[in-house]
Length: 245
Image (tube, rainbow, N blue to C red):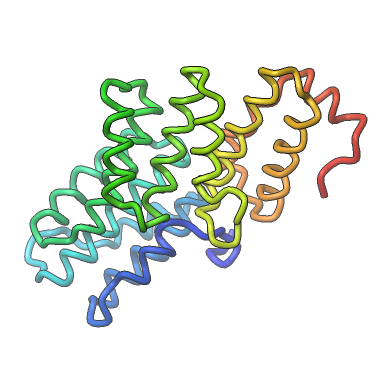
């Protein structure tokens, strides 16, 4: 799958924050490798190996390499490579802190909070999520992942109203400007709530919406947070309905 077929990701948003004088070689390699990786393209690993080591880089190069590692961490987290994601987070955060790149540190923080949810490390997660939402209030590419985690936490606590608010705050209803894997995961979270109330039709509507996004992007690795949500009853009800295009 070519990088042109990939959906909008946080790396695409972050690319706009790079300075005009950023080293083209590091930037180009990280963008190409990351876009392929988040699509679960196995050829991406060979491209990622072309990234330079941090030793001997100037500040501009180190800043781009920090961004590369944090973006790779985000991509790894979406396709199930959690340990690699944490490794990239460690190196990316360390570099970003050294060269003074606060936005890159922010991307690492929001990726880490989602990884902690996925790994079951929930201690203090709500407080961290609320702090990050306040810190990055005007940066949707960062807060959308935090809202996703808040929605998951609210669902676990049975707070359906808060969960719905958080899932919608990810931008799931605006896929043209949303981070697509986040939007798909949020839609998957929305399937859960009407099912809990016995509203199968509403659950199917959300499931269809997620399926439309997946079919449009054709990146099936992003289905992990959507596919398990609908129960057999949901799919049985959906079988009698007109399937999503």
